Length: 115
Length: 113
Image (cartoon, rainbow over all chains, first blue to last red; front, side, top):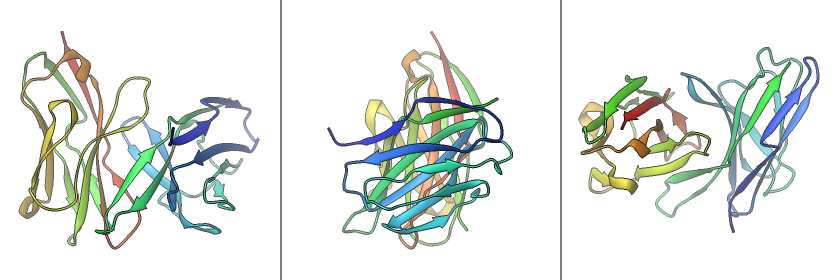
């Protein structure tokens, strides 16, 4: 089955530790995204990548880092510099249609709790 | 920069009531519009999308949305809701000039049986 896989589903970390969230897609999509979901704030874009070895900051990139060494993979590292890391993290991917439109497909999310 | 506003944060309805959730966006160019739904404990799913053509779009589970360009709106409607429609609904926008999908703050819908 084609889709987006995020792992793990739940993650607990101690304050001050870096943690990496995994996102893999087998949809052959060129673009991948990381969003953070907080109650009442919708989804906010952290980073996105349009092609391999290239990525751009979104609206709330501070305290996060990413890499895109392979088309299928876009891991997100939540660093100790992120002031409020406890949240639900969603990964997505998209492909441009011939008409220029993009539709995003989402993974199941990772709930990160920092204690 | 584009932005999306969903004015209803929480909506409570009884079964069989009609639903309309508001969505307004700010971007002057060509846009693609989406409604996503997140059922409790599940991942985000696409309800419907508008790319071009007929501004009245029909989606899954009896939902529809109307794109009104002059009002920068893309409201979601359903004539008769069911208890199983209880979920959080997100409106989203992107444009052909960029690669970013911008979301509204979401609307939590609770349908009472």
